[in-house]
Length: 515
Ligand code: CMP
Image (cartoon, rainbow, N blue to C red):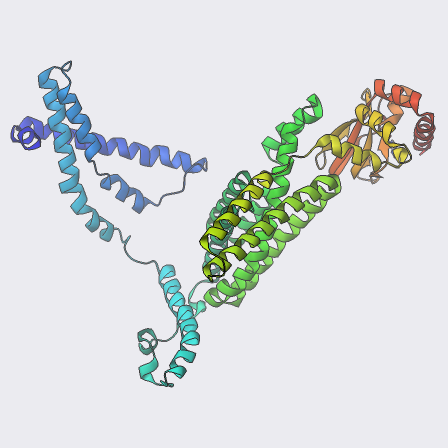
């Protein structure tokens, strides 16, 4: 069929073919030079170098799919025969054109653009890799040479060691380039660690996705911005995202806590997993980056990793302070999964050593699978449980028995305030007061006079409710702050049941008004 189609090729068809080739190039150029840069500016696609773009532009080959579609047109009785014939001929000729013109010229084009050559940076890296591998081969080779009675001498040396070339030193790389390469390598290793964690099932699918995306962003940032870019991205990963703000809104305003509890759960698991990866990356940096790129790069990267670890440690502290019960649960589930993985490793080893039969191993593996299923998912934060725990942290409620705590828990609404968030504006009407379960707030404060700090366990916003006055001062969260909100109508109910609480609140209000 195909030879027959081409046998009838007229000069007019050839001209049409050139139009089709031109149109295909223009269409591809529109994607490569307009759409792709837009996508990469929006961080939805990787940046592609001009040389690679040119190769993609020229190198798009057509094959079986185009031919099958052309033949389908030919077979379709509803398409007039001359049109169908033209489409089939042009499609076939176009496929052959890409195979016999584009394909053979692709390699010369790649050579012409120098894409087959190593960049100076890659050349130095290649040489360093050989040198580092050589040193390690030599270490392993020495005992073997000794055992075979081949002592120091040319004959015992492998080819690479006999070449007599001087060992390239890391100094051949510009310091900035070396640091960039080191950071990119470390970020790639971070990705690999997360994937391995997922393979071991110590990291849940949801969290591994976040972590890998994060490592990818770190790699990009290191490529373009070196250490400063890398640390900036690491920092933003600990900041509050839009999804979190939306979940916070649902929780604080509408009392719908499930999205927030899920995000908090994933967020906490993410930082625990990241911390574990960072600890392993320190060893990786010492073992792989140092020998390859020199001690200076090794030290700079270790310092960078330390900065990230410190940021993470304070995020973990803040979280554990706010949700101690949940944090414990999550850690326990993480440890449990790690224990399962170690156990599985032991069984595998015993099977490989022939100590247990494959049948026994299979039965053990089935048992492990069952246990793993039961702990597979990340536990979800139960805000209700945490509220009871939080109430216990407010001394005013400390002496209240368990039954009554439940009564109070129903009156109080948990609310998470973000760092620097304004919780109360001076002069506004007040409709609620707040107990601080974790964190602290600053009251008032001007450039001349520092804000009065009210710490966890205490409360604020009581004056407007008790004296029915506008708010007397501005109140802002200092860092993450977990609050229990008590609305005016519920305050009345609480005070009726607990007169001792009324006395304490009134005493504080009076003292503050006198300040
Ligand atoms: P309210 O006036 O409702 O809103 C602002 C709150 O800031 C106020 O209630 C008090 O709870 C708190 N506040 C005002 N002045 C002081 C102060 N001097 N020390 C501590 N807290 C204060």
